[in-house]
Image: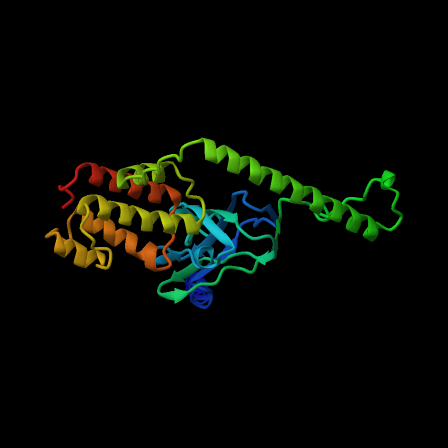
Length: 294
């Protein structure tokens, strides 16, 4: 009887502990304290939670703050908690690059567990160092053989000499170009690239920051519409109106591609450069199959 009572009391105490403990706890795993501007680094977040709970993960400040860009976001990896087998640990990883130098707070993703907001543990400041070291862009001392003891006067004298020399050089260059142009026929105007050539150029373009990713989505939509529409001016139509004008279904392959691009063009969605390149390749394939896009 005494042993049974002790067992019941222990189970009741465990139940109270589980009930009073937070359902989920998020913490940064060895966050970096210093990174270099434009150099990718990894952020790892661990969320300890009950088994079976629904964990929602969004980029949050990683996408909304212009000081950061997400290059890759791995799917959550769920593991058993080694300290408490009744719990689970979800490991979240992002590959991030800093776009602005200075001391900054670590960007926080958006987390929700069971529909409730979940804040990760506070992390220290992250020092993003610029390309140039402190003082590296400071003016260098002037040579002593200029014969000027006052540095300010030396700079003024040197600046005036450079202005005079630069003016003479520009005048001479203008005269030479005028004479050369008078002897040579004017070249023909360069042909504007076709929509297919613009799509091919997009496949080779660097797509490493949010601005270039958004511009790539805008350009692939414009090029695809111009290629399939020929010389007909329909630039003022929305994608839905344009599809209807060409009697193309909104749920066809072309309509689905346009629907994927709209949140990037006019919203805050920022896909990875791999996803962007995949959409550019799909647009080029649709353009090359001219007329079968639905």
